Structures are given as C-alpha cells and as structure tokens.
Amino acid sequence: MRDFTGPRYRARHVGGAILAIVAAISLGGMVSSRAEPVRVIPAVAAPAPAPASAPKKASAQEILSKQAAALNRGDLGGWLAPVAPALRQRYQNLFRTLRALDATVDYRAGEGGDVLLTYCFAGPRCPADAPRIAQRPLIKNGQITALGKPAKPTALQPAPWEQGDLVFARGRRVTVGAPKALKNRLKEVVALADQAAAVDDRFAAYAGNRQPRYRVFLATDKLWRTWYGGKATTWAVGYMQPLGPAGADVVINPRRLTSRTALKEVIQHELGHVATIGGVSTRHEDMWLVEGVAEYVGMQPSRADDTYSKGALRRITRLNPPPLRDGAGEKEVSAFYAQGHFAVDCLVTKFGEARAMEFVRLRLRLGNSLDMASRSVFGMPFRKVDATCVDWISNLVVTRR
Picture 1 (tube, rainbow, N blue to C red):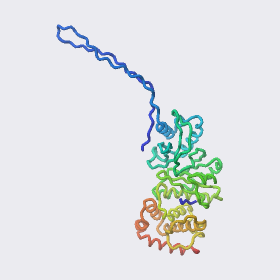
Picture 2: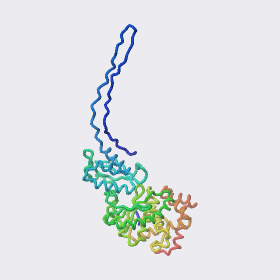
Picture 3: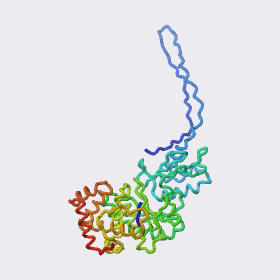
Picture 4: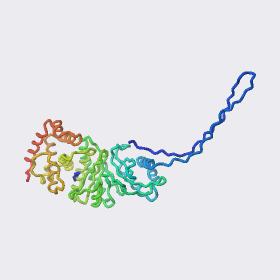
C-alpha cells in the first residue's frame, strides 16, 4: 500500500584468584679488604601483601553491555545470565526475536531511569544515530528483577518486535514476523514477499541502496492501531516505517486485502519505498515522486495505463502537485497516487527506466533540486520535462474533472 508517512562497551569480568607475591629475602655479599671479615648485609624485607579486596560490584551499564554483547554473538546463556527467573521467558522470547531479525544491539543509559536499547540490522556495530527504544529494567544485586514502563518511550514505540511475542518465517530475501493470530498467513506472505523483493532489488540497485534483507510485519486490526503509534488513515493497508540509517520496516494489515494479487502489489509498493528512500529523509513536497515511484515499482510489470491508475486519474496541470491535504478522502488519495504513477511512467517512457530512476535518486536521495536533477539526467530544465509529461498524460488518458 502506501505510506505518508560509540563504540560498544564490553564489560570486563573481575574475578579469579589473587596471586600473593612472596618475596624471598635476598642475600648480597660485600667484600672489603682481605683483612676484613665478610659481612652479610640482609636486603630490605618486602612489605607484606595487602589483604585481598572483594570483587568490584558491576554497574548497571556493565551488566547491560555484557548482556548485549552476548546477544550479538548468539549466546543465550550470557543474555539470560543477569535475568531473574520470573523474567526468563520474556527475555528468551526477545532473544529469539532479535536473532530472527539479524539485529545488533547495544544498551545506553537514558533519562529518568530509562535504558535505551539501540538496534540495527547490518554490521557488527550500530552507528551513533541508529534507532532505539526505551526500556526500564530494575536491577538489584546484579540481577534484572522487573521491567517497568519507560518514562520516555521513543517515537518508534511500541515497535512490533519489542514484546518478543511474534513468530517468524524467512524467505530468500525477506523476513516476515506475525502475531500468533496470523501465523497461518506466514507461508503465503513469505512467498509473495520474495517475489516482490526480486523486483524491488532492481530498483534498490538503481538507487544505490541495496538491502541486505527486507523486513515485513503482519498486523491484526488491534496491532495496526498500536505499532509505531498507529496509523490514523482509514484507507491505508500498509506503510513503510523509516528507521534512519537502519533502513525501514514494512507493516501490512492483511485482513484489509482481499486477494493475493492485491497483497503482492501492496508488499511490492512498500518494499519499493525501502528500496528507493530507505535510510534517507525526504521532503514533504516530494510526495508525488515518493509515491509515484513506489506505485511504478509496486505495479511491475504492468505500466500505469494497464492498472487502476487509468480509471483513478483526474485532469492534471503539473507533474508535481502539492502533497495530499490532511483528511483527504479515498477518491482524492487514489487520484493523487494515479498522477504520481503516470508521472514516473512518463519519465520512463520518454527517457528510459535507468535515466528516470537516476532522476529519482538525485532528487530523493541526494537532495538535488528538480531542475538540477532534470538538467543533469535529461539534459533539459524541469519545466520542459513537466510540459512534455503533462501533454503526454493528457493525450494518453481521457481524464475527468
């Protein structure tokens, strides 16, 4: 569907026997003259060793850093070591979930007693600006005895995976997570998502944004209104959630999709967002291009004239209309998406897919102005491209007011 939308510290173990240093008294001889007797001068006696001190009590940061390091190396025992028995199952589920997502994690102290769990999905270390969620573990005598509600949850909470209660299935290119209520949909969705990913990978290559693996979460109606703050639009069936340098997640509500074809198109559209704009921030004014290229990708191999876009399109006067207004109805939304779809289709028709996608990359990923990107790729100002495509679309499609 559519979306509007430090180095790791490693705790050191203090322990083991303390070796006492036993100093032998050394004897040295000093010979004066032949007539003098030899005098034995004892060396200064070594000081007695200090009594062994008790091992240093580990700080909360050291405990959590050591725990994160255990998860990153796949050590369930190390991850559970500081966890009290009452929380073992919760933490074991979270371990399984994060490992299924190929996550790398780190812990940092937050504000008001919160702890920030930083996470990413590629490489042994997360960048400084990686996404994070807040937790509130209560640590007593070196053990995590309770988990409270964080004082300051981050904007990404609740993340789909943070309760550790999902089941997962892995395909060739996609990992799909779902609540137990949707477990029976996993096989179908993984197969469709892998087909979609094969298309999306082509556009990720154009964008210079190849993905190690895509992540898709299936939501029930209740979870749809909860995950990532919930989505207020009544017509949406899927969205892409940006995660900064960690890429993006895709969330789908399968109950709202009535056919396999529609489900595949929605997944392919949302993964198209991941491929083209995952990892960067885009301008709100570029919604026409953001959604237009995702529609173009999502409807592959069909072209705009062979899709719903033909019937949804209305008369256009410019290639880049203003963003959708808040509270837009379903027909207005469909017309907006259709116009973006035809806009990108025109660029592909007139200049070829590779050049059209380079224009998309320069504008959406590198932030070039429309005119700069147009001159660089198409060899003409954007106003000329705009006039050409408005004329092409108007002649191709009989539009309505």
